[in-house]
Image (cartoon, rainbow, N blue to C red; front, side, top):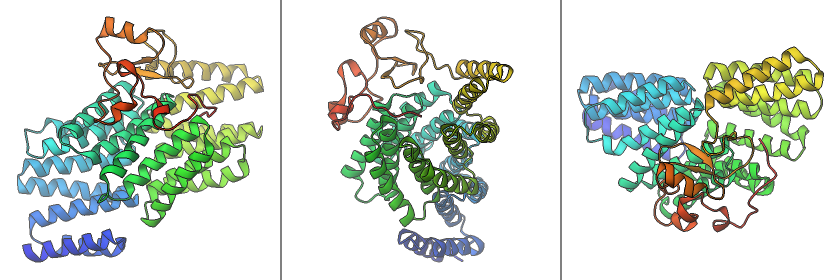
Amino acid sequence: MGQDQTKQQIEKGLQLYQSNQTEKALQVWTKVLEKSSDLMGRFRVLGCLVTAHSEMGRYKEMLKFAVVQIDTARELEDADFLLESYLNLARSNEKLCEFHKTISYCKTCLGLPGTRAGAQLGGQVSLSMGNAFLGLSVFQKALESFEKALRYAHNNDDAMLECRVCCSLGSFYAQVKDYEKALFFPCKAAELVNNYGKGWSLKYRAMSQYHMAVAYRLLGHLGSAMECCEESMKIALQHGDRPLQALCLLCFADIHRSRGDLETAFPRYDSAMSIMTEIGNRLGQVQALLGVAKCWVARKALDKALDAIERAQDLAEEVGNKLSQLKLHCLSESIYRSKGLQRELRAHVVRFHECVEETELYCGLCGESIGEKNSRLQALPCSHIFHLRRGASRLSRKHFGRPRRADHLSPGVQDHLGQHGETPSLLKIKKLPRHGGGSL
C-alpha cells in the first residue's frame, strides 16, 4: 500500500470513527498497519489506534500500539514524532495506573532536544505528569505540573488543553477537600466547552459534567449531582466510552449512598467495579470498594466491610495511592474501635499517621491537617497549599511572596476570583451555600 492509498484509508477510518462506527474504523486502520510500507502513514495510523483504544478503555492494546509507534518514530529519525510517541506511552501507563512509569516517560519527553512539537505537546506532557503525581498522592508536584500545563494552554491559546487541566484540578481539590474549587474548575471547563467547543468531541462536555457531578455530591447538592452525572452518562453511552461509564456508575453509587439508599447503591458499585476490572483501572476499583465498605458499615455488617477494605488496601498499595490507603486505615480504625479490638486498632492508627506524613497534608501556617474536612485552600507560588483564613493572605505575602492568581486561569474567569488571588467564589458562578453536608 503506497503513500496516497495509505492516506485515503486513514481518512476513511477517521470518518467512520467520527460517525461512531468504531469497530469498522479499527478494521480499516489495522489493515493499513498490516499492508502499508509508508512510515509516515504507519506512524499516523498508530496514533489513531492509540486514541481509539484509549477512549474505549482498551488500555493494554493502547500500550501495545504506543510501543510500536516509538519504534516507528525511531525509524523516521524525527524528534517531533519521538516526543509524540513517548507521550502516548506515558498516557497508556497513566490509564493503567502505572504512575511511576508515566512520570518516567514524561521526563523523557521533557528531556528530548528542542522540537517543533514541544510547544504544542509540552502542556499535555505536564498534564499527564500531574495526573500521575495525583495518582500517587504527591499533591505539591501534581499542582506544579497542572500549573505548567495551564501556562502552556494560555501561551498557545489551547482552550481544549485548558478544559482538560480544569477537570484535573477539580479532581485535585476534591481530594484535598476544598469543595468550592472542586466545583469551580469543572464549571470553568464547561464554560470553555460552551464558548469554544463547537467542533470538539462531546467527550469534553461529558468530562466536565462528570467532575461537576462529583463536586456537587461532595457539597451535598445531590439533585444537581444526579443531573450532571446523567448527562455525562448519556454521552458516554452514545460514544461507547467505557472508562467514563464506569466513573459515572461510581458517582451514581456514591450519590445513592449519600441519600441512604444502599439497595440502589450496591448494584451500581458492582457495575462500576466490573468495568474498571475489565479495563484495568485499579484506582477506580479502590474507590468502588471503599464505597462498598462504607455501605456495609452503614448496615453494621463490619466483617463484610473489612473484607472489602482488605481488597481495596491491596490494590491501593499496588498502585501507590497514599490517600486511598489513608482513608482505608481510617475506616478500619473506626471498625476495630467499635469491635473493641485494641491490637488491630493500634496498627491502623500507626499506619494512618504514617500515610498522613507521607502525603504531607499539613497546613504550613496553622499546622492542622489538610483534607480532614471541607476547607477553603490557597496555593503559594511554590505549590504548597494552606488553609485560607483571616490574615493568611497577608502572612503568606510577607513570608513567601504574593499568592498567585487562582491557578493562572484565562481572562474572563478572573471575575470569579476573590481578593488577592484567593479561592474563586462559587457564589459568583452559581448561587449555592458555601458549605455543604456532603462527605467522602
